[in-house]
Amino acid sequence: MIRKTTCFITAALLILVLTACGRTVEERTDEAMQAARDAFEMNRKQPTESIDKVEFYKPVGWKADMMKEDRTFLISKRSQTYTAHYDPNAKQDSHAYYELLMADTSKEFIQKQTFSDAGVFGFAAISAHGDSSVEVVTGTGPVQVTAIVPKEDLVAAIARMMEIARSVQIAS
Image (tube, one colour):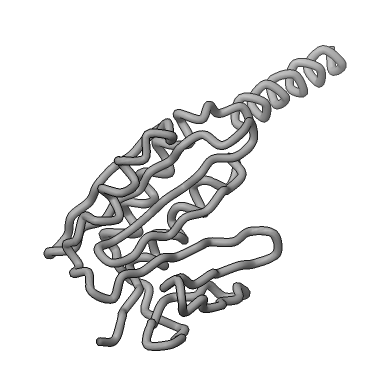
């Protein structure tokens, strides 16, 4: 009797674990879009790094490098890199980066969403990139943050990327 109960409990736990790990991309993207929206609306991250008149939030343990000629900065940790492009002339309500992204016909978006809060425009988009990763793009007005992330890191990555995008302050 104990052996049957143990087998049943083990089988039930195995099914639960496999079900949780086997979430579809669509389920992950729904959760990721909610995380992006939350990060956009909370707008709680203050700049912690300043490079060449650009201030932004740099997550703890991450490294930042500026590429002045391209109006780009890179934020990286181990093998993960986020690329942030900025336009010092764009306003907070600018749709330019979003419109450029939508005009790119080579991308097949799994999901995309726009946000607006107190005159600030924001967006998040997820497109397929191989079997185990996705391309994530987040942005607000004058900033766009892009990365290729493993599917299992999608929710945390998109929230972090939106926090970075939302925190950028460009001195004139």
